[in-house]
Image: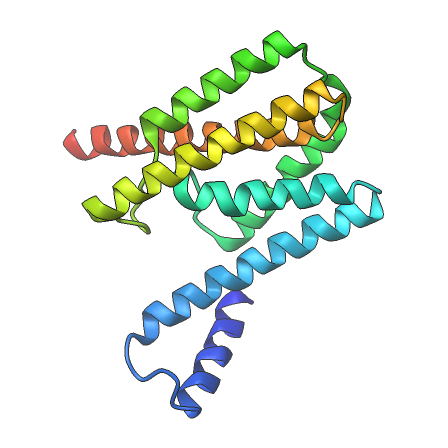
Length: 194
């Protein structure tokens, strides 16, 4: 489906003389864009139906903005990415009542996440290779955004606003996916060496 829609979009862009080179790159980028739009739309629909619109919005924003700079594990297929993205949000909805942490525990979780982001970001994959300047930029953006998220999370907790739970959940998932990609990279490297 994504490939078909991307192909039709490329054909339209070519007929309008908007693109003439790098067809495969444009097609791949359009497939990713369509996949991301489907992810966002599904989460927002679920959020609207289940009366957790702001949680859905926060979840999308954290993943779209922070994960752009931190990187992290992604499934091989678009359907896998969409399914995982929606499943993680569903898991939050099921377990959100259990995310009521004390301020001390919340601070410890935030420090662990910050450590992961400072140490690992940006996590690169085969689909995303950054030059040295881009790596520094992404690293700085990752740290800056994570500090802003941490402060916002603490403020929401201190104000007894339950939205801090989706913020820390999404923030934690980004860090876990970063670690996951690094582990997979190490396993692939070991398999390559052997």
